[in-house]
Image (cartoon, rainbow, N blue to C red; front, side, top):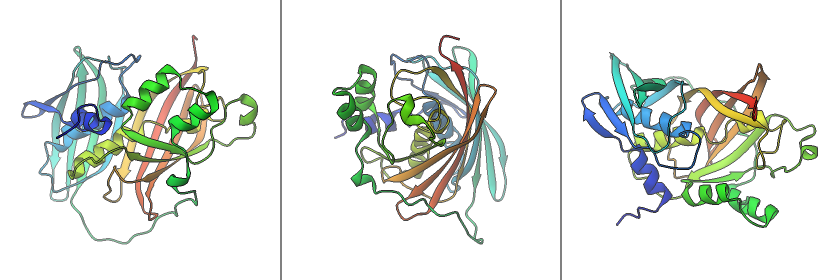
Amino acid sequence: MTDPDSPTERLVDLLDLERIEENIFRGHSPDEPLQRVFGGQVAGQALVAAGRTTDGDRPVHSLHAYFLRPGVPGVPIVYMVERVRDGRSFTTRRVVAVQQGRTIFNLTASFHRGEQGFEHQMPMPDVPDPESLPRLADEVRDHLGTLPESLERMAHHQPFDIRYVERLRWTPRELEGVEPRSAVWMRAVGPLGDDPLVHTCAVTYASDMTLLDAVRLPIEPLWGPRGFDMASLDHAMWFHHPFRADEWFLYQQESPVATGARGLARGQIFDRQGRLLVSVMQEGLFRKAGG
């Protein structure tokens, strides 16, 4: 029997879109006290819609997406899929996400039939094992004595266990000389089943959770009052190997540049054996709060 209160069950349900036409799907959006729908949710649902129009024998190898407008929590999102190409080796899909009659998100995804070829990769960083690190909620609770209401709510509903490789910094003084880098261990808090598309879309969801941390680190503490309003502008991912999102993966993140109120972040996702599973790029908008 499934548990409707389980964060992973809610994530699987979130990614289980309703097909309302051959190439049209509808996803629900939780009615939560947020300013906008979480971008990782929209990206994950859009990728599900794209994948549901393929034969399933070609895993996704890349996606490129733009966040065009903020989504409204609690309002369903309709995903319209265009079957751009079905070739001998590659399949391409374009997805438009619409809410309340307006386009909020565009995604193009490419699927590739497996082939043999040469291999190389950059090595995985040497970091502590996830079991030796505190859970995010526990680290914040230990420092503050209690959890802020927003983080308490997030900890209760969060489908991923997140553990920062380096200790959290709480004051501007602690940020002096800090490089724009961050790393976290993550995994779904419960089993996600055996559908590879669900695991791919779950990691797509998770990839938007902490990536812009690397941009913020030299500016302000990650867990405290925000001096900047943030929004994801675009998102790109390349998938190199199959994986399970309910097993530990390391998300290494860095920001090569920030300028013009925009910050660029790139991430690498490794499994515990050191295989590079996914590469990620994202640009975010950073404006002074209230500006």
